[in-house]
Image 1 (cartoon, rainbow, N blue to C red):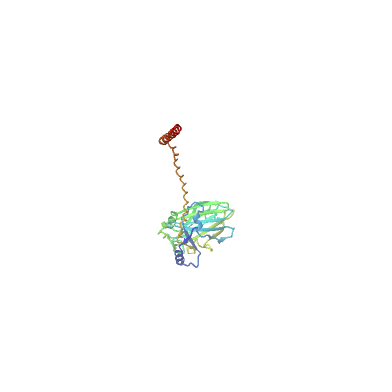
Image 2: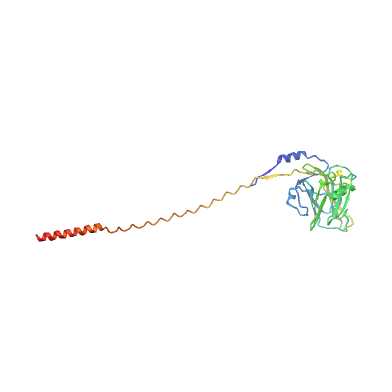
Length: 288
């Protein structure tokens, strides 16, 4: 049976090092590298799930959404699942079915978009190339050059998966455990007649002010990589070598039958002489 050993000391140190953010939600990005294709890889199962459930504008149309985050040495990743069975794609980016992503990668906590360090962009669920950006020209250009985004429209809603090479964004984000970035997500729900937005939901911002005030963004903390060690599986017991077949005992050498003794010529000759002597004795006795 495998034995899993988690580096608890490192995890505890990381936990103690997490700053407290009283006014905004905090999410954790697990360590891992997914394939950005709109399909949930196994690595996403290591990331905690968060709800995008703050109704920040309009009415609740029954839309629900969750998201997860990962990071590695080169990029930050998110995976968003939206449950919205009524698809309306005719409106523009600001009110069509889709999402808006808010970034303060260097965690500057500024309260407007006048610096190059914060930016947000929106996109339509059925066409992620149809986008709009807010921020300085330099900030938008830096952001546009560092991300990959895909969307998948399903019968039950939408899936968004993206990577952001924050290591290359402006001054560059320090891609290591313990790094904190400012971040928020907004999901838009379009009206059936495609003339307005009926509702919008946020993860951090519940007052619909993130579009003008980055200080309301939530925080994402890069978690320590979890190293899992496993004991090598016990080597299977060596199979008993098949017993060597007993070698047949060497066939006993045929013992030649004892040769019949050859006739003893001496004995026959002696018998003959003895018989002759007896005969002579008998004859002499008769002649007396």
